[in-house]
Length: 377
Image 1 (cartoon, rainbow, N blue to C red):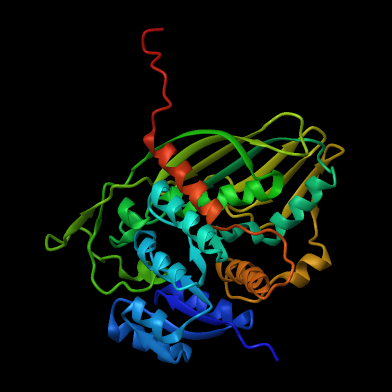
Image 2 (tube, rainbow, N blue to C red):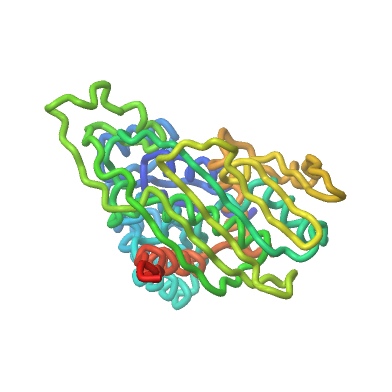
C-alpha cells in the first residue's frame, strides 16, 4: 500500500485551514501546522485534529520531514519559508501572490527548478466549472476565432475594513495580487498561455484604514469594522497599494490568427450597476460568463441569440466538494499536485513559473508609466 503524502501547513487563518482540508480531501496526511502565535496555532491544530502545532518553521521541517509544504500566509512572508522548504527537498503549494516582487518570485522559481521539486501556484479560479466549459466551447470552434476578452468587476469593499496585509505592498496586498492574478489565470486558461504585451495603471482610492486588534482570520475581518468610525481614539494605518486597476493585454492564441485583445477592469471600492462578468468575443459568436470570477451561468451567443448553456455532466462530476468557490478551486489544484507528486499523468497546472511571471507583470503595471502627454495637442 502506498504511504500517504505528508503535508506541513504554514498559516493558521482562512487559507491555512482551507489548504489543510483540501489536502485531506485529496488523500494526503496533514502532519503539522505552523503559525506566528502559539496560542492561535495550538487552537487551530486542535480544531482541525492536526497532531503537530509550532511556531518555528525550520524546526517543523526538520522534525516532520514533509513531502509537501503548503504556504498560506500573506505574500510578504513567503520567500524565506519557501526557500527553506525547497532546501529540504519539499514540493511546494503556494497561495498567491508568490512573493512581493518579480525579482524574488523569479528566485523561488529558479531554485525550485534547480532542486527539481514540484510547485503549484494557486491562482486557481481557472478551475471554475464554467471556465472549463468555456475553454471546451472555444476549442470546439463554437465562437470562431477568439478576438477580444472583457473582464469587468466592481467589489464595493467596505472602506473601513481593519488595516492589515491587504493594505500593504510589502505584505502582498493590493488588487493586482489578489484579484488580477485570478482573472489573468482564467483568461489564459481559455485562450492560451502566451502573453505578448501588457500595459496598465493602478490607483489607491482608499488612503487609510482603522487599526483594530484581534483580526486573525481574513474571512472574518468585516466583523471587526469599528462601529464608530469617527471615534477620536481610533488609530489609522496608511494604504500604499492599489484598490483599482485597468490593464490591457495581448495574448497569442493557437485558435486565432491575430493576437487576442484583453481588457481587465476592476474597481475594488466602487459599486457595480450591471453584473460583473467575463466575455470572450469571437469571429462567429461570443461566450458570456456571469460573475467576477466566472461563477456562472454561461451564455453562448449564436444565430443572433444568447442561450444559457448547461454544464456537461463530466465537468459536474469533477467538481470537488467545498463550502465556497475558493475552497473548491484549492481542492481542484491540490488534487492535480498530489496526482503529479505520485507520478500519475495530469493535465498541466500553474507552477512557480507562472507565479514569477505574474509578479513581474504586476511590477510593470505598478510602474504606471504608459501615459503619453497630449496636453499640447
